[in-house]
Image (cartoon, rainbow, N blue to C red; front, top):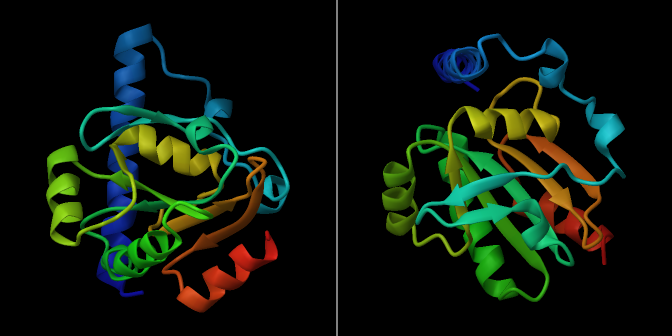
Length: 184
């Protein structure tokens, strides 16, 4: 990973976090409690129930984690400015299309502007749901174990809603398929 990308990613996460703290301070008159921002250890998440979330699709429709219960699904945190994210998305879309909803579902959660994410997903013909947000996406990523805030970040969840695999960085097709195969 090059140094410029790492610096950009850290700056983006810090900016998003600062925006969230500022919004909460204005909304409530005080900053949220620090313990609400603790990141669970990845090892503690494995085998545990996935955290809940609700984010909007690029068309504005709200989607919750519970909407995917009963299916094996991969939640993939990404952004249009993240080259490794962009590189893995066609592979994820192909896997989702070939599976045709019978097994693996892919859900992309973009730390990005909804219009930019929509245009980007259309250009790449992404065949899976794309959710968007800003600070709320950073916080969801943290609840799923992303302590660094770096992207891409992926979490594989079984049909019972249990977290089975967590991966920071670009996904390799064979490694992902092997992890999915372990759930069958």
